[in-house]
Image (cartoon, rainbow, N blue to C red):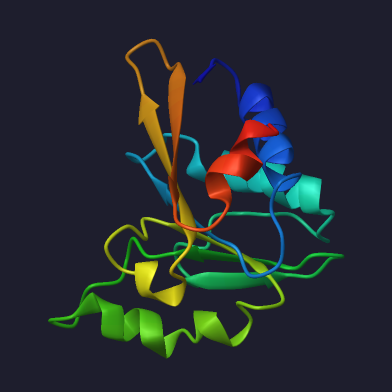
Length: 149
C-alpha cells in the first residue's frame, strides 16, 4: 500500500485499529521519519484513546487510556546492555498486554517474545516522501483480520 500524506497515514492507522483487539502486538519498522508515530496516532484515534500521541523515544513507553487502551513503546534508544531484550523485560510491557493493544516502534528482534502472534508493519520511505506499507502477519488469525481491511 502506498501513502502520500500524513492524513492518509492517519486514516490507514484508523482502518488498522478496526481489526485490532486487546492482547494484540504490533511491531513497526522503518527508517527515521518514515511515519511510524503518525501511524500510531491513527491507530490511537481508531481505538478512541485519550490525549495526544507523541513519540515515546525519551520515555520509552506510554499508556493511552480508552475503550481499548494503547501501549505505545519505542525501542530505538534501548541497547545499552549486551542483550537489549533485558531492557524490554524491564519495561513490563507484558503487564498490560492482555488488556491493551501494544504497538512498538523499532521493536523487531526485541519484543516478539511478548506474543506468539503479532503483526509486523514495515514502512518504507521513498525519495518522493511516499510511504510504502507492508503488513506481515505472524501466527494467529492475523491474515483473516487483515483481509477485512
